[in-house]
Length: 179
Image 1 (cartoon, helix red, strand yellow):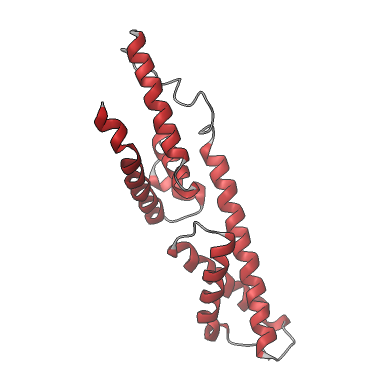
Image 2: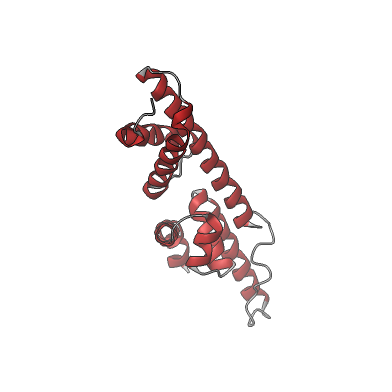
């Protein structure tokens, strides 16, 4: 007897929420909804293969699917972030963008110091925010392209950019107001 997976959306969402806290700490509500939908789809496609009739065994089977999907999302997010961030941790970050009026040593030194402070502030952001900052501001990609590259929605990219800007403004306020 195949079960109706639609009856289990609440349990699936609960499993995904719990598992995201363990495996995918930076998940957003949109990601958790997408993950829950993916779990439901996989469960629906494979429900004929479940032979055990007990409710506990069925829920354990759903939990295992959820765990695998969440872990895969977490891995993809980490891989995308590492690929997207490029040379953020590189000591030479920003050295190729010296301003044209940098002929004066003081100006160049100030520019390099600011780049170091900005690089450090970006590296303190959560990984999900680092990657969108890098792609948007350094690689100058559009929100649509970033969303496609990271496999997330455009709204999620915009939200992450907003939160990254807020965090950077807080972290850099004291440095740039002293100047």
